[in-house]
Length: 364
Image (cartoon, rainbow, N blue to C red):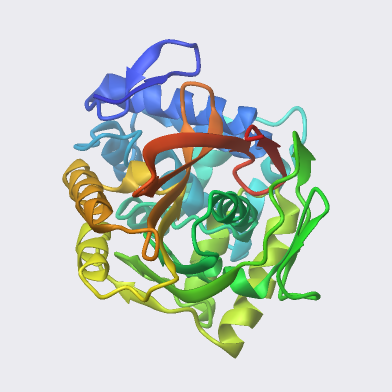
């Protein structure tokens, strides 16, 4: 059973349910946001939690009576995304002082008022998990691929991504990266990333992409303004650079859309791993900030499928798995890699900022 720290340091079960679990989820999310440079989002989440004190609306009651696991379901971010969408759409300008991180503001009163006036617009935001897509995470993927190439795996990668959302990281081959001086990708690219780097620079290798394909249970079409607005609503409002990146991603997807299929993670990976693999390529599963949203039975199926495929992997047709996922005990994100047939145990390569601002490289 997965354990995480709450905002107070108390261990919590990410799969816990019930009213106490709801309160813990909001406390944990607020602490997580503060630890990751998102004080405004932390304010919104904390103010939403006050609705639980006396749930006087269908919106608040639905949150308080959440039937599933609120932390695993990212319930606080579902609610926060709905509020941000109202603000971005010009429907709830009263939220401006909170999003400006102004002092002397009664956050709870403002948000309670927004809920009273716009509840029909907010309720649908509780129906599905957040769509969080961030191009900056691709820098960590690239660093891990460089490490795999240094390990001797073919540097031509057939990438399979789960939880692709709008496929922003499936356009990884169109971006330019400066990783502590190691240059990768077209220059100029559709976007450019130069995260603050700590530790030794990653290995220097030419890499190529034999394929880029992803899945999502509810793919987002970036060329549809309404769907793009939904994705923007999940961007933490204090992270201004991410809005510029989103516009760049929209332009790139308009020029050539990424390949995304509508499927759950387990069905997609099982199907793709059953297909022939070209010699001289590395078949690669990659995902970022999505594993917690994958149901436990699907996690088990993906893991079993990768392990089974790993037994068939060869030096000419290796298999690798890159994950950039949150550790809610430390409120940090860990970049881990494993590969078959040589090294199937997970290697912790780095800590990384959730949105690509910095990378703390741990590998030599």
